[in-house]
Structures are given as C-alpha cells and as structure tokens.
Image (cartoon, rainbow, N blue to C red; front, top):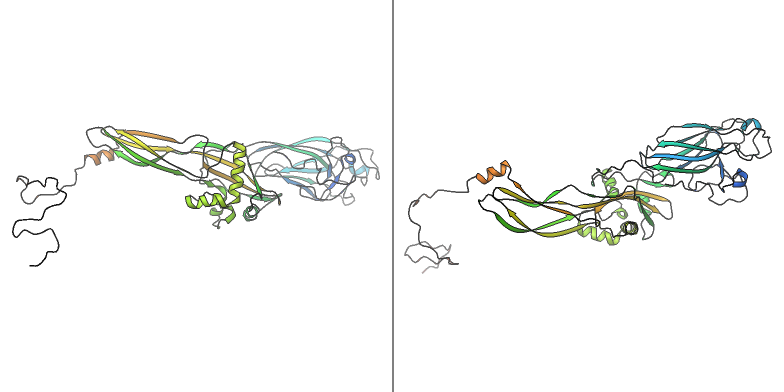
Length: 425
C-alpha cells in the first residue's frame, strides 16, 4: 500500500507559503509550506494543522479490515513567523488516529529562542503510529489540539513525509462463492451510501481500470458434487455400460450480491456476466464495459484469459460389481479475484470480488463405486411388480406370435377384433 501524496507536493505550489489550497488526496484546509520554508532537505512539504480541532485526513486505499498498519511520519513545531516563543518553546500538541485504532496524543519537539516575526527552521522528529484497521480503507486522521485564541491560525503543529505499511489479515478462503461480502464504493476519501454512482462512472469502454489485489486473490477447488445419476447393480453379475455426463459452472460477483442483499434492482452497467443464464451472460460479455475492464486487467496480471462461465461433456464407462453402486463426482476448479474498479476521471472506487471457473488448473472428475446403502439393499430385495392369473394359471402357454411386428386379425368366427371400429355389411 502507499499513502497518496504523502509528501504534500501536489498540487504544485508557487512561493514558500503558507497556502490553504486543498492538498490532492487529502481532506482538510491546512497551511502548506514549501520544503525550504519547512526546513526540510528531502523535497517534502510541511503542512500545519491549524487550530481548534482542524484535521488532515486520508483513507488508506486497499487496506482491509483486520490489517495491521504502521504509519511513519515526521512532526515539527510551527515555522510560522506569527508564533511567539511561548507558543512553541515546549512543543505543540496534536493527535493521530486510524479507524479502529487508539487515539494517540502527541506533542512536537520544542523550539526555544523563537521570537515573533522570525520564521522557524523546523525541528523535525520521526514518529510512528500502529493500529489494527477497524474497517476497510481506514481513515488516517491528524487533529490539532491547539485551541488558544491568542495563537495565530498558522502557528500550529506540522506534519511531513507520511508513509504506511501493512500486514494484511489472514485470508479466509472458506467464504462461499454465493456470499462474497458487501461491495463498497468511495469518492476520494468519502464513503458512498450506494454503489450506483461509482458503477455509473465506469459506463464506458475506458472509463475505469480494474486493479486486482494479488494478495487476496486465489485459486481453489470447490466442494464436490454428484453429476448425473447413481447406478445400483442389483444383479448377480458385473455390469458395464457408458453414459454421457454434462456439467457447467457459472460466475458470481459481490456487486450483484450487494444489490440483492439490499433488495435493490441491479444497476444495468454493473450487471456482470454472472447471472447463471448462459444466453444473458454471453450478451453481457459483449455489452458491459465493466466486464471488459475486469477481463483485460485479469489477463494483464495473470497472463491468461478470464472465463465467466464454462461447460463440458464427458463419456464415462462404468463397471459395476454385483451389490455395488457407481456414481461420478465433480470438483470444479475456480478462481476468486478481489480488487477495485477505479474511475479515471472522478476518483470513484468500487470494490468487487469476482469468482468464476478457472483456466489455471483442470476440474476433477471422480469416478466412484462403493457398497450399497441399507436403503438400496432393501430396494434390490423388493419383489418386482406382479399380478395374478385368474384363468389358466397352470395351463400351457398359447401359441407364439413368432416375433411378428403386427398382430394378425382374428380368424375365428365371432372373435372380437382388436379394432375399435368395424365396417358394417
């Protein structure tokens, strides 16, 4: 992961500052100084937090709930020429926190011998802050604790060179493909209440780029399922026969599941080829920009094409011993990809998890035989359907029809014809 614009270099500023122009990817109107005015030699800008609870905030993109995050940065008392010696001699207070983590109260180093009207040179101190993310894309927040009404707004603690590293949470591979979690959408640092606007922002061939997270994407074999029927050999001899097996796999995605969970109609642009209806999914592959954006990113990352659905047929020859049962199981090979649809224009981000049949490893077909169950034994022991012979039960059988395809009409006078209608003479 990376902190965006952690050196506060964008947008490009003119002069040494301070300026209160919004800083790219950060929330909060803070005072920004040039590297020279901040007393820095690494090219990073210093940002003063101002006063009265003002904040500097950014969501840490790509960080998932449960991740261990370590933020490193530097702080300094204000370099503003509006500061008096009394206001910076013992340092200046502020707080830092990340969503789900503790609030840490910090005081910068002191800057003695300062006089009002003379800018400071910066007394930068390296700091670190650790927390466990309590939500996806946790918010990192710096809050000024300077509240004295006599203090000038520019005379406040300064922050510079923010970096962050994370240890992702243990990946849970037991999550079922039909319950991939709730998709989320953001615009900049703000969480969207619905997915609608973020999905709409991707409605164009190149409107969005999908960015897969290889750390949380994986291949797996799904649960085994029986394909076709179970054949039970109730005879006294081995049986051999062949049968044709047909099977198919479909895709699933968290965007559609999120809409379904909220009982909302799925936004048309967000309808990925995961409906399970082959004709509809083939249509979506061709018509939905988000499907193309995802497939291109997948192939670029893993060097093989993505498939939204699959189907196949196999002829299986079975040899079933007396008293045994034969059946076929299938374990489909699947792949799960997690990532973000990112708008190139509006900084919308739509989180999605997509699960589909995998080309990376083959499906497993398990041809199995085994002993009958008690219920099957009972069925095999049951008598065949029968009835009684009221007349001639012990008489010899009548003449054979010799395998004729058509039964001849009776020739005995008075015998009843098998035809329902007869000509009148």
